[in-house]
Image 1: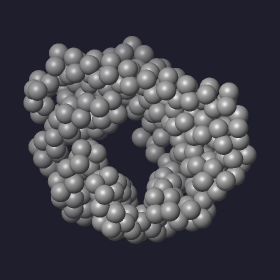
Image 2: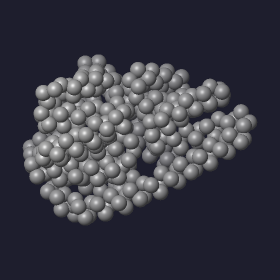
Image 3: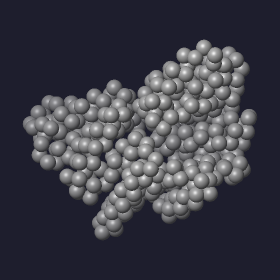
Image 4: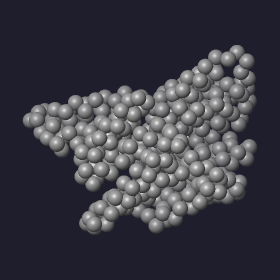
Length: 384
């Protein structure tokens, strides 16, 4: 299967491969599925879903069950990228079932991590944890150290969200050891990034408890980890992870009230995001740059940045970030005395937040029903 380190080049090469007249149905399905993965990763999930629709139909027509499972897995990733978490869970469950029939352990694990990520997004944390514990079982059964490390890294991120910091620290240390055993140093940057996120969560938790000295120490540790993560991309450049790390670094400077350094870092992340045409990086960077401008008493600049970011989020169907833009815009318009616009955006923020909470609740209930009815008795997954 063709995989490119530069995803935009990879997408072009994959499309060119599809024009070849000698492709077998299995090869075409494989290329279409890889194209869908690359599209989802680079912010082109709609294009990915177009590719994967053809792949699923082709695999079904030619009775290629394993290829169909791979296409369903790619569909799950695309739906996740569009914040359509119910479809992501449904497709990943079907993909897992197809992989399980063929004893494709690594692929089963990948499907489980997608299920876990979607469950986490809608607040079904128990399902997310159980999916990842199942993935640990699979990795141990297959003696797959790389899959085990990836799962431990993802599970640590989840447990950090749940405030189970001690468990998360142990899992991240184990993930490092298993990556060394698997001889997969390229993945260490992702573990480092989660270590950084974990320290940021511990800092925010300490701050909520009023432990400001401890919070500052955790933030500084997170900052050190983020810098180390950025340095690691020099030997194995991945521009998408590099831009994410810059964005995380900017947030840490912002948390530490180093506003000027935060601005410089977010401007770099924005420039990389524009170069990659990556909507999530662009939108998040513009959101923080708008906040910084507003804090610097530059409301006109803030309005320009926030309006641009909201437009980007709308075009890319980034549902989660849109209410954040409306909230910031309400504050910016209030600062310049435009009460009517401020009221409009405040109302939009409340409506968006309400719709998202309602939608997540519905998805969580549907996911739990699918889990109990169709999934909890599959191999390596225990019932709830």
